[in-house]
Amino acid sequence: MIYILLTLAGLTICFAFVLLIGAPYLPTGKKQIEQALTLLDLRPGQTLYELGAGSGGLTLAAAKQGIHVTAYEVNPILVLVLKWRCRKLKHVNIVNKNFWKANLQPADGIYVFLLDRFMSALDVKISKQAKAGTKLVSYTFKIRDKKPAKTLGPMYLYEY
Image (cartoon, rainbow, N blue to C red; front, side, top):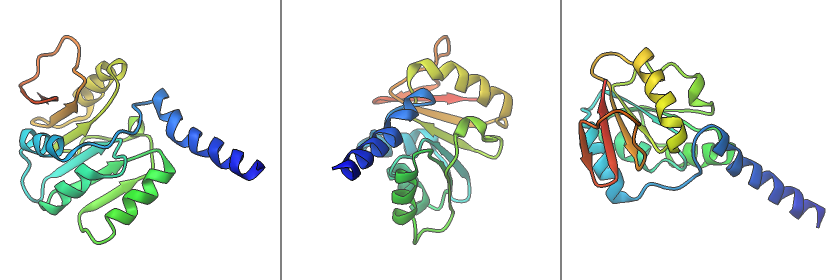
């Protein structure tokens, strides 16, 4: 019984603590992945950073298009799932790290599902670090006081 309780406690910690730095794990649906990739409009060889990659639906779809993907995920369970799912793909770098500590400068595009309360801080981070022309697609949540360049369904495109 104690092992079951410890396992449940560990799983709860792995999936709940991310609320302090980002958003809960919610997989992105196929339609939303298509919408995000359409707005990002990246070409093979360009670089996408997925901040909070979860189980990697967008990472997989982008990598299959020849896009170089760096996928940040802090949940160690989801990192294992992501590594397994991407094991046969080239151009995927999976990083078990808090993306707030990452250098976003190499990214041509960034995808994020991030709670509303963090979007302004992400905007500041990208504004300071990103190269000219970097695109951000946010699923569901907008950057306050900043108008998206385009929207497609629940996706918002910002250009830097």
